[in-house]
Image (cartoon, rainbow, N blue to C red):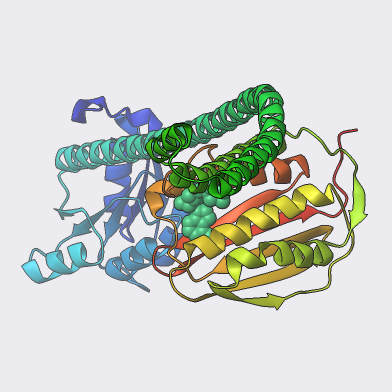
Length: 443
Ligand SMILES: Nc1ncnc2c1ncn2[C@@H]1O[C@H](COP(=O)(O)OP(=O)(O)OP(=O)(O)O)[C@@H](O)[C@H]1O
Ligand SMILES: [Mg+2]
């Protein structure tokens, strides 16, 4: 920081504007003796020109001058960009407060009275130069500070951006990680499913063929018993053996056995059918089977699937078809049909009473889409993330395996496509399958 005593006269130029040569001479000599550079002007106009040209550090300005007076000169100095900051000290013989006030009003910083006391003038000049220096330093410092603040803000902004980029990178990594986990989970479940399907398939095969033979044998035995009954009925009564036979028949409750055996066989067959269905679902899920990629008409697939699913749907919903124009799609047609089947059956299951299932299709930019919308129960938000998980079901035990959507997911993924879901509880659900027209097929 500069102090008042730090003003170095030789570094400062002072402009004296005065029309009285006697005044000017004494003052200029004195100030030059003190080491200042001094420039002199005889009237206001000249003073303005000099000020603009030499840019003095301070102006000593006479008030009463021919032409424009000191106040006007000062006003013009303050109006010009280049000279605005130069401090002006008035030299005035008028000591009335009015003119002093005018002097301050037009931008003067101080005044000295004539006749001049040169020592006093020196003190005031030094004071104002010092003030001016301080002001300059302060301005420079402010500017530096402002610059620093701006730099810091810029640095903080850059840091914040880097932080945000890192956050988004972390999010992306997390998503990629989750997807990887999900696909690994699906792959290992696929292997498990294939293994289980294979193991169960064999015993189920021979049990069901045994069941067929067993049913024939039982029927033969039952016929035989009926025949015995007929024969026994013709033998005269009262013989001991016949009596024993009748008692044994009663103890064994043969009539009940006859009817129950038929029911048990039917139930067992139904049970076996369910096991077979599950094995089939597990096989499908693990992509065992078909590997022929064909160009297929999805509308055709949808229609034939609707025919098969008709039993499940017809009591529940009216089907509205709004088919667009679809190109033929390279796909594993029967697997896509399974996807449609799952979505249609799910839609029908979601409907309580009577509803509407709307099937829409469309194509753009090398992709096709098929949407299946129902106005059923909808999916609650907490289940939304889980519906594609294998074995996730909200259906009662025995009526849903929870494999439908996970299977659909892996089939669509294999086609290079994706499934989107929108759902509003109480309003309904829309599944949209997006497929590339020509997927990059695994050979
Ligand atoms: N259209 C739909 N409306 C409401 N909920 C649905 C719909 N589709 C699927 N869900 C929900 O997603 C769950 C999983 O469906 P997913 O098809 O995988 O299995 P599932 O239908 O329960 O059994 P599966 O299809 O194996 O017989 C369903 O239990 C149901 O809660
Ligand atoms: Mg299902």
